Amino acid sequence: MTPRWHLPGHQRWLAECAGHLAGGASVVAHLPPHAPARPEHALREHLGRCLGLEWREIDADAAIPIAPLHLLAERFCDRRGDEAGGLPSLLASGGLDGKLLCLRALRSDSWRPWSRFLLDLEQAAQQRPAAERVRFLALLPANVPVGFAPQPRLAVLPWRGIVGPSEVRAWVDDHLAGRQLGSVERALVREVAASLAGWDLDLACRLAELDLADLLAPARIAARLEPALQLQGGASSTWEAGLLDQQDGSPVVHLRWLFAIGDHDAIRRRIWRGQLSVLFPLLEEIRHLLVRDAAPFLGAPADAGGGLDDLEIGQIHHQLLAHGRTPPRLREASGVLREIRNRLAHGEVVPATQALHRAVREYRRRL
Image (tube, rainbow, N blue to C red; front, side, top):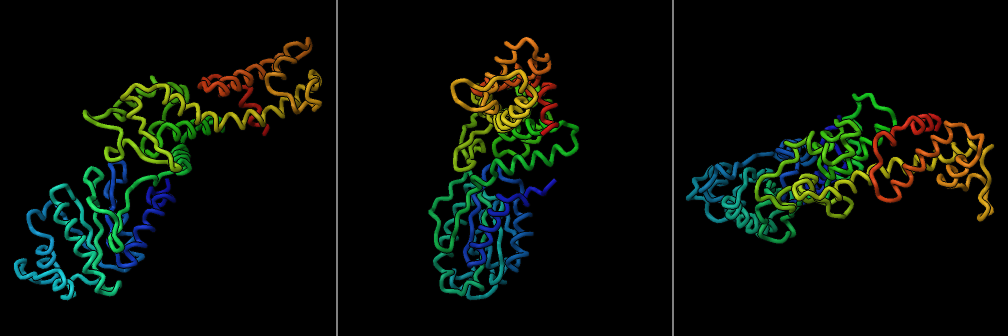
């Protein structure tokens, strides 16, 4: 499969982070629980390669209660903490030049002194050329407030709206490479799994492993994936809790939250949207083939002045039922297509038995 950090949204986020750092700014990466685990590995590989800075890591939790200024003086400037002097003196020593310092394991208590230090650094750094400035990359959990607005030399990059629907579909498609599925079933599994999962790539793959009949029924999804859909007590549908994000600029709540509150109607709407993206255009293409096959038994619509190709699926089925010599296979096919069309038009989920009916699969092979 394509490495996760090679997906377009991930690459854009890395590029934005690199752009700030290349300009001499520090970055606070504000990361909810659904951000990739241990992002420092991907960041080190990408940023170290494109910026040429010396990457060093600081475990902020382990550093408590040492003040940031003293810790940096001891670790990088060969000074005892009590001899650190002020921040301008520390920067002038040159011990921090050309370094990219990654702050990890941050919590509320460790973030407070580091946030004050970064704000002081933002002011002091303007006196030094961009190429010589030390840069910080703070990996801050989303449940810890940043506490300040972005500054000219201190950017804040939240992990929000990074994974779009097209990336989830491509991710699921890669995951399905080993499954023996027909073209219609593969497309339905991909689109429905992506619609249900929202931005969650791991959940999308878990959903894509289900049989189509299970994937189309909320109760069956809950039964098959119960551990992955459970919520811890006290969870809320927020970005900080990892249960809310954005796709294409619109808010999307996690599937776990919909199951937790019992909103099966919202879950069915996601299933329906996934089916709609596959079946509706497919029906239109099949309709043209059906008209060609059934032409000897059809008459042009009397009210529109058009040809046979202007007949809707319902009109085709009605005429085929009324004609005494219509072959049974055409009646059956038009009936199935009409039922699928009506369900989609009324926002109803199409059962797997209809979506994968023999007539649908045979017409799909002819396209």
